[in-house]
Length: 195
Image (cartoon, rainbow, N blue to C red):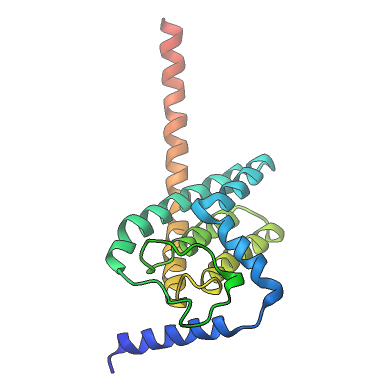
């Protein structure tokens, strides 16, 4: 048996084990958390809160990483992956966990990429008391994608890796954008004074 097939079998087995977990108390909450991250809404809300709290660098880096991860995952990696979504019915994923099954391919997980991108990038500019819960939230959102039955664990791991890579690059992009904006301001002011 090839390594690829072995990895796929292990992935399906892990998916089935999560489906078997008896978590009625958490099913509704994890489903809502997973849905709150649709289209990056959860992370936009967190970014707004960070900006209002005076943590603008954290908000900026998080949003740059989110945009980069979303673009890379959805426009580049998903079309190359071509993996079908899991069969929730075949694995008896409880209906209480179900969210709408996305129409896109399964590999890698876009939600996981966004979650790890935002939480990792933003957390770098925060004290541990805020960074640790934020990183935990990112990991929890990634886990929900397996829990609700729309991704295999391997999809989540790959998406998380893509998000982590985006988070490493985001501060440099954000800093470069800020430098460009600052460089333009004096020119604009001098042009106005001449007029």
